[in-house]
Length: 435
Image (cartoon, rainbow, N blue to C red; front, side, top):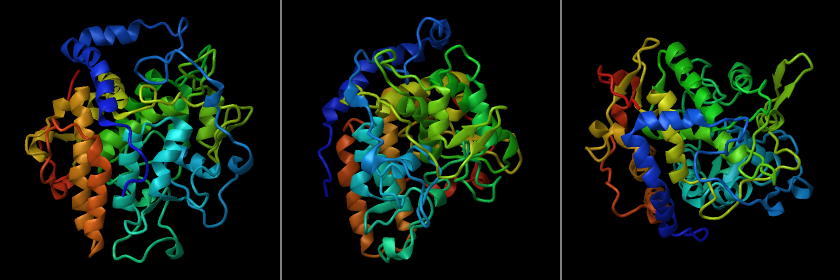
């Protein structure tokens, strides 16, 4: 099945080629990279929304319609909302079905249309959500918990939704949600204290802007908080390294408001609070209203087009910046039954040598890893469900929709041993990346 025209592989490769000289320089001389990050003067230039080439133009066409059929409305009885504020906002504005159950064809198109998420990022994520946490026969997935029986195809496997996807899609060390173990499995509710920690980082700045610099600081806070408070904190290759880090970089990259004054985007306090369903009292007290995530009025997304949309290659560069402040966040492992006992696993041991942990800091190899780990992990999840005849169709969907984005030169991951990835099976050797 092909549900819309793909951006050609050549476009993805062109993006990677354009950014790799800079990335290689950062890897070869990390000290100069750190100095570069520290030299920028926030009083002279408001930083762009993500760590890539700045936008040079702005168009009124970037405004997102929040009127008429896309007017905001809170979720009704039975409507599903989950751990991702951006997805909740899409449902509240009718860009996703308002019941929170998303057809495969809608997932990537809406995130591109509204947020400027590149199809070569949005398609793998929505395919992954459908196959791992959704209805693989009906090709839908829930942004929250399990859909009601009338909205899913009767199959033997379960459609748990994103709220039930711990360590498959949803992960510990979220930018705003709590860890599964610490909150009895509640990964949907925003933890106001976590949002407060993010909010406080820039709220008193002359021009508050929750850009990648700020989110990089918050990333260190969220990782350290999980490591220091959750004895069963676990950080796996896809849900951890890829999704949990992307959840941090997506905030400035996809939620920033663009204008002629700020073509690269600015994420101010009011915009941030709107997307996270937060209101602030005159005394500064923050209050979270579940399910009330909202796209602000007069909000303009990043420009569209292959060179402007947020792609895995853009994310790979943002990950480099995260690694300068929180190197453990670009590793695989977890605590081993006690707090602050994070134990790393070298990717080479679980990918048959196809990728090493250090490869996560090479943007070209990271883009390969993102696609290859998806292709390797999903079949194992699918085979753990009794899907019967639906298994073949699900595996076919995986390869037909993701394989076109993969550079043929990428190293292939064979069997991915998911059963070995748990806090109980972590080797007692600390392996991580230091930059």
